[in-house]
Length: 303
View 1 (cartoon, rainbow, N blue to C red):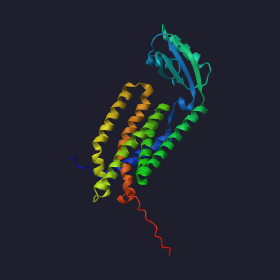
View 2 (view 1 turned 120 degrees about the vertical axis):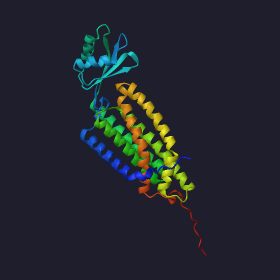
View 3 (view 1 turned 90 degrees about the vertical axis):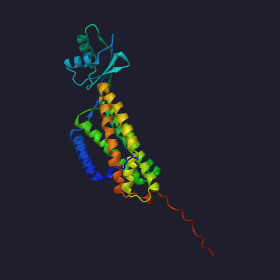
View 4 (view 1 turned 180 degrees about the horizontal axis):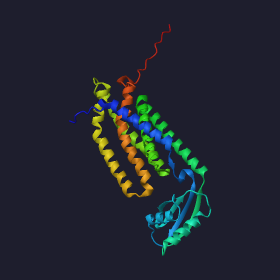
């Protein structure tokens, strides 16, 4: 039988660590801001095609040598097709990029297939819609947990999820990782992953209220977290291995996405133990909260 680990014995230390990380993340977020990509700020998209497969690293180096330091290069379908994204609304930008690559390309010249401009207004709409989508997701989660479990569980889960998002965004801000639509998708995925981890622990806590009738809330949480620990570790490690493969072998295009997921999974595993559970202690969850009220029938006192 697995020995019960006293997770809540260090909850005050964990709370201090949580507050420190959250404050630092918020400071970085508001002080340095997010490094929004072209999806949100607007810019020019250029699709190029080569006669033979193109080397992304070499293309990036050629663009930097030609003065295009902010260009983002990625494959697009076939190995001979590339997408170049860069800030600027010059209608002749595509021709300038093509000329620069043709001069440096030698016997593998580039041909411009299309040039599109994404205005800052479109980028602003994407940013607002992404933030609104995140808020709606958190609101829907809170309503679901309030009906599925109890409102105290919902509060614990939401505070845990907010912590995960804030820490992730703070680290992205600190290292000035480009925040584009793929990174936004990673943040939304973090919410789902962290919620799943938290619900597993919450479900065991609720079940143990029926089994461990004489145990205190802290004892219940320690036992429940210990019982779900192997599952949590197995899920987190397997997920981190997949994320690590994307981080090291996915290239520059998936770097921000992978880093956001990596930070989010680590934060989500931590918060499901030391934030969501601690909130239950603060709110003084007890067995009476999980017992539905008894419906009393009215007494007919008419003569």
